Structures are given as structure tokens and as C-alpha cells.
Image (cartoon, rainbow, N blue to C red):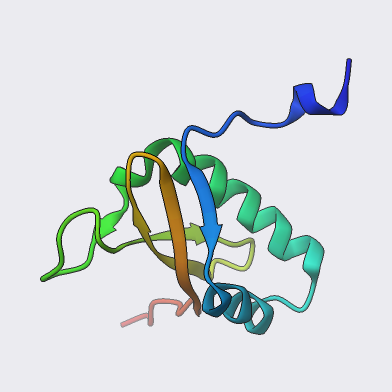
Amino acid sequence: MSADEHEPIYLREIVYEPEFDEALGLIFSSIRRADEVLEGLTFFLSRRAELGLAVRGLPLNHASWLSQLLPDRSRVRVLYEYTNDEVVMLDAWLVPFVPEREV
């Protein structure tokens, strides 16, 4: 069995804008962790990009965002555009976990 047989088959090509790469570098100190998060995001977005949340005031496929939960309960949120052929990763930012206050 070759290594290629374990690679996911993407339905849409994933394209990374330089701003997206820069943002990931600021979020993650570990390249391995960034790669793990990217693998999950690209697997999902290449197949179901239309399930992200639309940005108000823009056409549905123009810009959407999706969050991925991290082990510390913070989230990485990504902004992307998509067509039937590709997903363009535009930007990313970290949304820290804020515990609810007890009343």
C-alpha cells in the first residue's frame, strides 16, 4: 500500500493566501499543531465549504467563516471564499475560551 492511498481525495482545491499563512504563524507556535488543525479544516472545507457561516452583506459563496475547537476550548476561526472548484483561505484568528461566570 503506497502513502498516496492514505491521502484524502479533495473535491475542491485549497488555496492559501499569504495573509492566511501569516495569521496561522501568529496563532500556533508549533508547525505540527498548525498542520493538524489545517488537515481537519481542509478535509471538511474541500467537501462541504457551503456549510460555513456566511458573512453578512456578501454573497453566500463570497466569504464564509468556520471555527475549529482546540483542546483548550479556544477556537481557530477561518475566513474563506469558495467556488465549486476551490476554497481560498483568506484569514485566520484565535477566539479564546472565556468561561461563564457563576452568578
